[in-house]
Length: 88
View 1 (cartoon, one colour):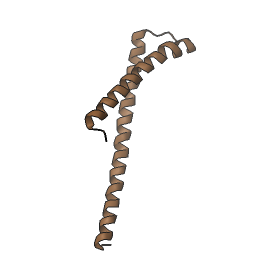
View 2 (cartoon, rainbow, N blue to C red; view 1 turned 180 degrees about the vertical axis):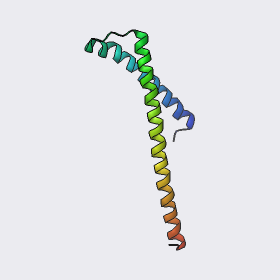
View 3 (cartoon, helix red, strand yellow; view 1 turned 180 degrees about the horizontal axis):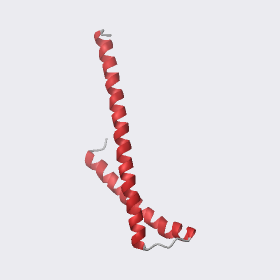
View 4 (tube, rainbow, N blue to C red; view 1 turned 60 degrees about the horizontal axis):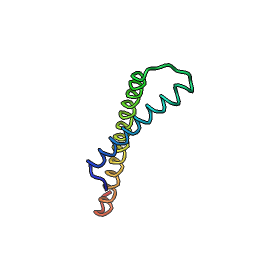
């Protein structure tokens, strides 16, 4: 089981690696492959924008799924309690 700190470090490292990879792919694959002309600063800005959007998306989806899972587990907990105590 991961601690909260370990999860945060893993998330930050994953995001940093993804950011670097995205910059490199844009610079060495997308620009030459599609003939785009952008400066390195524009590349960083575009990649940063998509990184922020990706982090927000991941956070919102995680909260939605966590809420669904918590809600589902609460319902199961009540069913088990009802069965154990004969309530219906």
